[in-house]
Each structure stands twice: as C-alpha cells, then as structure tokens.
Length: 83
Image (cartoon, rainbow, N blue to C red; front, top):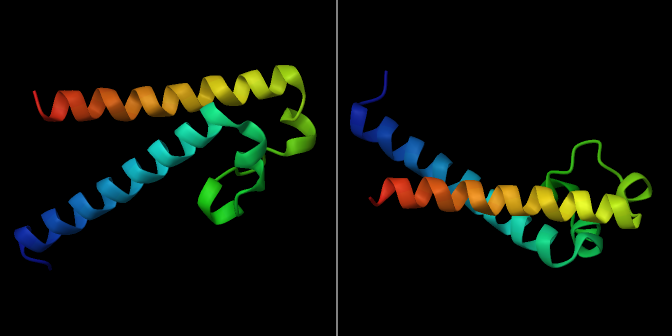
C-alpha cells in the first residue's frame, strides 16, 4: 500500500495530464478540426471518430462545439479549484 502523500501526488499528476490533454485537444478542435484529425491518434484521443464522417461542414461544427465543451469544462474546474 502506498503512503497517502505518494497516492495524492500520483492523483495530481494524473489530473494534470488529463487536464492538459482536454485543453490541448479542445483548443485544436476549436481552431481547426482538420488539423485535429491529422494529429496522431494517441495524442488526439479520437476513438472511432473519423474525418470521413465529421469532415463535412456540419461535422466540423460538431467538432468545434465539442472542443468548446472540453475547454469550458477545464476552465470551470480550474476556476472552482482556485476559488
């Protein structure tokens, strides 16, 4: 069993990594969905979303909205964390 300080440190590092990935992907999705589809799959975390499905104008809008939700969620958590 890990000491509490080590577990807390691992938890904070995991939270920072997830927050960074959400923020990075959200910003790239907002700025350019085409660029987001060209990122390596391990970095973009696309899952089963493909450019053929979401490369259209309507699909691009959906990707931008999802990017906004990612960035807004991280901002909300950070604001609440430092309040």
